[in-house]
Length: 392
Image (spheres, rainbow, N blue to C red):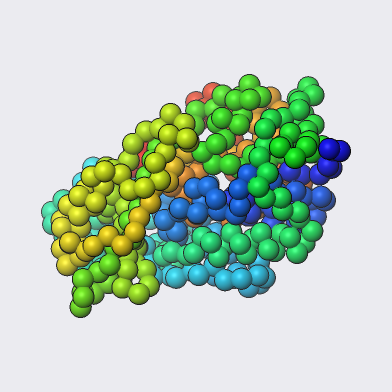
């Protein structure tokens, strides 16, 4: 088959592939081609918890999350297609005695950057989430009214539609099999349907990024972890959760949903993976029991709620549990967005906007240099208020 030509090849049609394709097309990046081995949201983007919040331990991630919320609020004017299903029900994070000062600092950071977050004492939490059972283990928390959740399927399909309307080409069912490299440039992307001659290439394939980059001799510290999520039905007559809550002591996360259902995850049911192919996407054995234990402790009125459905997905995470973004070390035209699991949905819109700006030679709206892939070799890891984990 004859070679195709593209100014930018975006590999992956999940959150970051769709968002970056949209921003690239909006910035006039030329011939943008999105290549996806299956279909939109076929990877772990389609299994996201869908949480929206801007509670973060670093300025760069907090700024990105705040900008992302503004995109959800102004979707019609900024994207122009579809509806993200954004519900600003509020977001509450709790902290124990060991982490409460970090929680307080994160809330202050949000205020400094223009967010609506506030530190709250335990006796203030009942008004925010009446279902939450409080005890002395909870030392404080932070609450942001603009937090909540949105619909990842609506978001990604809207971005892809808007990108296509601006001239981006979408190629589904197409597998990338390797790269053609000349010096410090990737000059071609090999696929099962022929080679694409590329000016610039963006790898945003989530948990597959490490394997894909290893084919060009790049080894980044990206690990994989399997995370389960359940959808439960609240008991008849029971009040529903009011806000999205990341509860530190019982280590569960709960978000409201429509039609008497709520979503929940429990940190304690996850397991490490050597490669993506090792993931069983069903609920982990024992996960429901771990989740019910957490609900009994913190949401007693919801304890025993039957599981309607559930799934597992893969977190691709770095040593500092923050995304790795930018030019791949050793290359002049190969870009990467990876290691974002646990934060992907909150950061995708603004982070993709910044990557698209980098790729087109314009100034990113947020300085994302702290997320560069070479920060690990330079010992410039980002701060974590709660220690290693997705709360960041």
